[in-house]
Length: 273
Image 1 (spheres, rainbow, N blue to C red):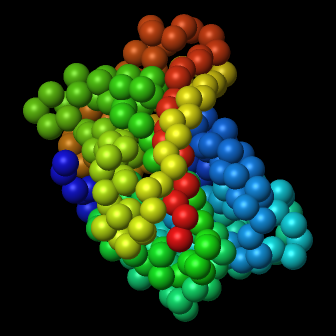
Image 2 (tube, rainbow, N blue to C red):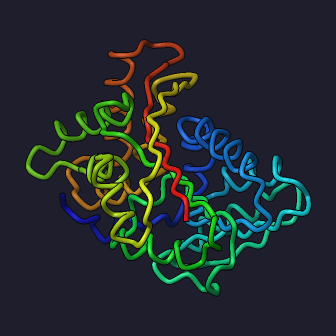
């Protein structure tokens, strides 16, 4: 499997705002609520969130965890974290820019480490998992999710196929390569083992629905609210606006001219320390 391109981790310019306004309600909110419920059931006293993005899980955790539970939210990308902090949470959260590959925290610092759809971006997953294990206290939990294969995620698959038709010589493959590129359960388990975790993880596959008022919403969300935008703009020949419109037309042709509804699917992983 190919490694992420350097542009795959660039969430800059207007991307964080589009991501938060459109992509978060489109695909992330159901899984954020699920992770937060699982976190509460573990009754942690100190929680670290990595790859917090624009804060959808952070907000859910802050809302559901007891007031006495300390919550530290980190992300590699300052623009995403700034957006998260600006939107804010119901109670204080410690926001900190941090690389999940080199966590700036002491050994055995947290009862729970949570990550929503971030592990796919880690360049060396066993090394990142070893960092998580290092900062977890004995008996702690590593809780994360990762998207299933792109064919199980309707809107992402349709957008990727449409862009391949627009750019046949060099199809933009960000969605298939990175967000949906880490779906093999056996590989996830092997990487956790390589990261030092001694017990098998619990991996559950969770299907949900992605809904929007029109086909144009997911077209804008994917084409302009993710690093897919970087690939479209780098190729030339077709403008970002034209590519977005083509994706909207393709989504409408498959899912209808009015409100659209598509399948999304991901793995939820619980790993004991």
